Image 1: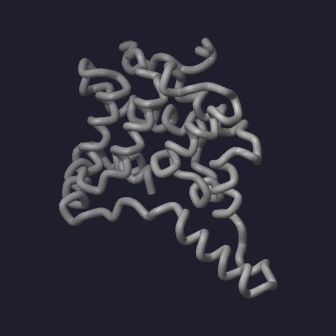
Image 2 (image 1 turned 60 degrees about the horizontal axis):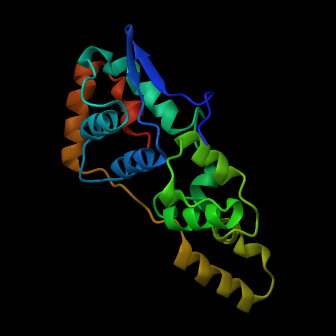
Length: 196
């Protein structure tokens, strides 16, 4: 299952940090992004610890920050806006595992898998899989349905399975992030707001 083309290390100032590449670790990182009880700085260090361990040199953090960002996005610059509307890693985790088993006959509970491979499998799921049926319903435009009864039924289903809003920044978080911005010269802000 593992592929040598997937990233397994990060480098900063000559230091090499092995990445904990299992998809479960990346999902934990995404849960941390969505945790509205944590400030941006707390999120960063928690995610850095999960991915790279406890021995990261503090002087490497500014270099590692965008690399961690890129890794969790599987190298993509930004999330597709349509993807954000129709899919959520955390909310859809069980449906995703079910769909991967349905499509590829792989039981993710029994194996380790690289985060990039996990995403590749999601991208290759067929239309018949459970998660892609959900995504199709979420992405439908009710205004395109002429029949009022069918339109209302679609809206009702969409409301039941919609991606839930997450993370409203608290005043305390904003103050901590301003403090960190003053220390880093503002480079922190893009990463801290990545989950929005």
